[in-house]
Image (cartoon, rainbow, N blue to C red; front, side):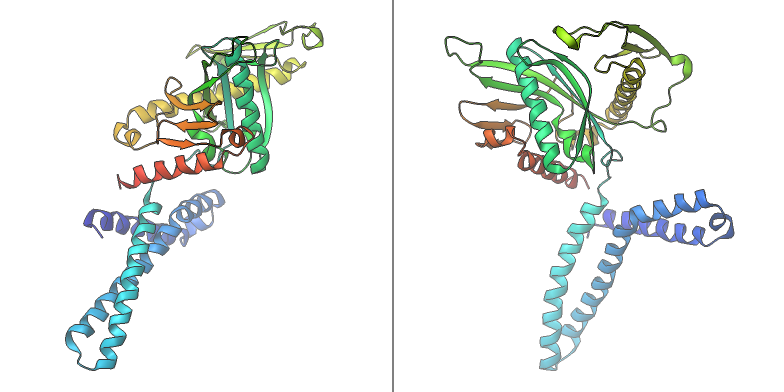
Length: 358
């Protein structure tokens, strides 16, 4: 094991023991909030400490086996020591690999619920139809994962597409699985509206925002300007006859969120503020990431909406993720929600890139 890595692990072990000593004091033990914080901090590094302790034990055993091989002459002892040396060497190699994984900094947002924003880009109605297809793909994927979807806002077109649709995905570790979906998704296919049968290329942007709690983003009472107006839509009963649509403006940043899906003004306001809070958190995360250029280089894609991340070629039944040079000829299944092979490949590539930085 390299010296730098060993020193890092010793520092983690020292912190774990410091937390243990603090939790044994009357000052911390008698304060439930303080005890909970210490216990949480200790729990977060517990697996790493256990793995490192086992590594240290096996390292000492390996040194003892090597000493026996140098000093002993008994054939039976030498055979046992050689077998133990072989087993311990393999064990240490695996433990070191495990330690590298455990040393990777966890994304604090991985366990959060997620707000997904899909917007039609270049391509007109065909882009709007593909936005609807992506919404369906993510919906089916969420069903497979046991997650729940709630539409927050949408702007439908007359042919069944979406100029924009925003929805929340609730479940276990949602952000950890969906965060790599951010960026420009390009589609190549013959549109339903194309009479000549020509292949068209359209684009849709996807934004992935971890749901923000009040503790994540503080919004002052004077920071918001709230306007109400009559909602609009493709016509019929979907158009409200009262001023229930809500426009929320975050004065300090100028960010604007509109919401009109609900007939209740209050519900639209709650949803709009939820979207705003998520966008503010995403902005904060982006600013922090830009200050850690080295770390950002080790990640799979920047998550920038302007970055082309994927191409969906329907005539060839092909999906290509340009960030990791992944090509799968199973587009039909992926569009039905079988997205896990793509997600797994992106997670693995991100992990491998970050491991190279450890």
